Image (cartoon, rainbow, N blue to C red; front, side):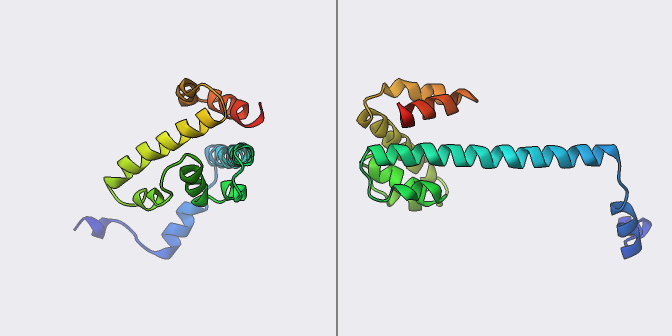
Length: 138
């Protein structure tokens, strides 16, 4: 009975979706700004991890640019089994896989000769980019 009071015709939907306002323009601008920031963050972090893997002498450092393969190379460079990447897709096992990924990252930071406690600073927004830059290029 609830559906009887609504007009579900195609004309109704087209009329509703064709209305534009300044709020819609602001939402589109915010979405575009979020997309640009997200892409810039992806490029920056991938570049930093690429430089880190080059420093460690990994032969497939370019894996840092591919979304799933970047975890493979991180497990491998951090002296963990890279097959934990499969565990990232299994419910409840992914918590264990994330712990091993964190252990791998700590091992990578130790190999770079940095203090592993700096990883805690990566929990702070914007500071995480500075710390990652320091790991990669210093």
